[in-house]
Length: 325
Ligand code: F6P
View 1 (cartoon, rainbow, N blue to C red):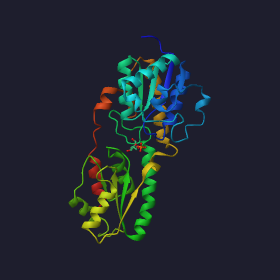
View 2: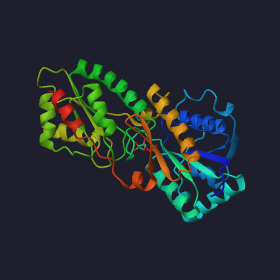
View 3: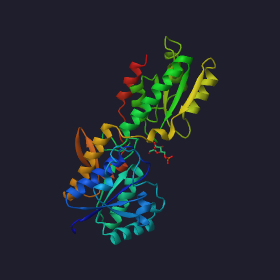
View 4: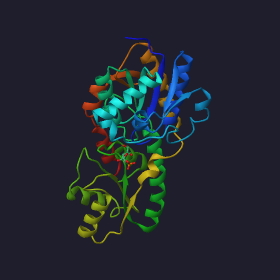
């Protein structure tokens, strides 16, 4: 294997707070250890179209506080094709890039794996997603900030819900995963969470209602994990039909959940993972995601983190259940 001199870095898929902290960490740790660093703009599309810039330590100055990603991001359709990945490889050759660090979620790491295998190219992944749905790491970059953002929003909604004695269904992001919904429900003292890992039927819904407003409580908050078929609107409609006595409202938090300055926890996580990515390259690691488990940086092979479903901690369901009486 030839010696790695230049590392390209890109962000891909949905942005998440802390991606900038990770870009900074990879750039600075890379330069500290004698590598050249090249920033690639607009995710894999930028790799295909050669949108590349050499980064100095100044290029990443003052970005640790900022949400989003200074490198921009995209969900590249072209990179899902072999032809697109071949073009991306040509850019690496032309730019003298010998290894890549990809910050993104499941789809981005799936693309990274295909590219690495087809071109025998070293790629290191960093888990950058608010959803926390990647196997092999306790937390992903952006998850903590988003939980805090949701918590602040729900606390505000609770004020108005209490005043009017209403039921609120609040929809949060998470794609196919209920980590955001379940943990935020616990953090906000919500009466219930509806998550894909543990589907809720109408009888359970009735129980939530009675547990809430009909007891001594002034309001009822149900956090619903986003879903094509049965999101917050679906549940609100069912309640309106089956319990017409309740005053029901829906709030879909949407993309405000993805923005904002990263929390201290996400900044530290992203910094440790960025340093971990450079260390992995120095150790000759390739095609692994940097995970964080029990306060240790770990290497998770792409094949594992992409293909294995992250186990949902069912104890959290019980915690919410016991505390929402
Ligand atoms: O994967 C991150 C995420 O924010 C999901 O929670 C959500 O389903 C999706 O991205 C939204 O994507 P977009 O910004 O493309 O609408």
